[in-house]
Image 1 (cartoon, rainbow, N blue to C red):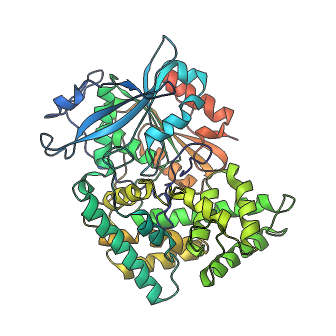
Image 2 (spheres, rainbow, N blue to C red):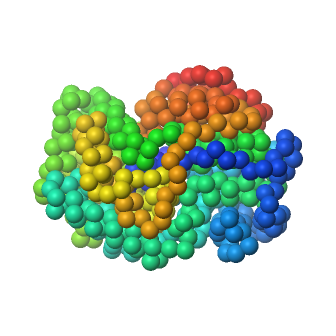
Image 3 (cartoon, rainbow, N blue to C red):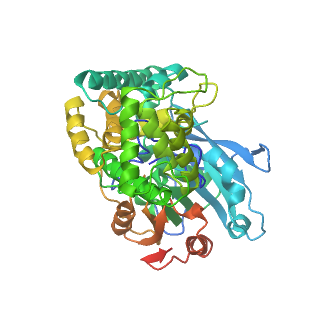
Length: 508
């Protein structure tokens, strides 16, 4: 469900001015065979991958980097291979437990980049006992990345009106969505069928073995909770400890996820507005409803006449980019001051600061190039779950979303439209994971999380046979990296000692 700039706590948030960090998940009820407690299981035909020796090499600042090979297609493992980029910061103490594998979310977030930026921010207790390990899932970052469009084409894609008011605008949106799908097929067609979460979860078990760990210790943020839940469902007896922070409800349909996220961003915007009106110099007035109305008026204004862009790159700051910039700042309270300042200048007609926030959302660099976050995000989401079959079906879903979220509903739900044209058949309908046989799994939810609503964490914790729900009563997307002492102590004790917090623990 999306941390482009790692929003102060380190999750890669992909929202597209179209696909809001959807963090979609489809969990199958299949489990690899030959898994007995305390034994290392190697699925048939995969011995060469599970037994590979990893060639680590220093890659600066105390990190080691390597590649781990996995099959392109697990149904035909002897054919093509992929190389997953991996990074680690070695444990500092002599009493090492093993590896702590991390996925920062997205889908599409680079775990290599995230760990390089955040590993030293872990507290001493974890740094002493674990190698902090990140990886780029297949199709992401440095792991056979999905490519679809060049920078200029992506500029057009993200600037296209994602809240169409006429059939002509809907047609334009459908055209750029088709162009996105066609570009992915042309440039990355061979990997598109194999970038889904079910394959990425199997990769994680190869990584576990290649890292020398008998069982997996893992922290997944946002979409990473989906990946972790899928892993636990397939490999329940290979789990040592799983922390799933900012969880996704695996049972929701693709458009249900988008609708819930739109509502989550609406609630987060209200929290921002309530804070803003208490600050001196708030540009939105003195009442919450008045502030929200001014934001809505700004969006409408940019829809009719784009705001100025003083960066010199020639782009126009129209409604989709305004909304994307606002959404980016809602992931963490640390960005609320920047949003206040950006809105202040936007209300004078200058949208440059909001454009910078929007660029962070989609990993657009100053030179006009992009990371592959959004391309990987779309590719994974489009194969993980079925989507509406055509444009009219999407239009009906948009109408539902707009009732719950007038400022984000259309923007978020239309974001899934490229999946209508996707060249790869999606996975089966979602099913709840149980991970029967796994040890306690800790699920963390934040009550006013914009991208992964708190209800999703409650749902996932209830679906998992051994799920333990921990609640952070607060704002922002994901909890662990908000430096809340209660959350930190509960999670660290669980990761180090295997002792889970009591189900229903609440931190403030």
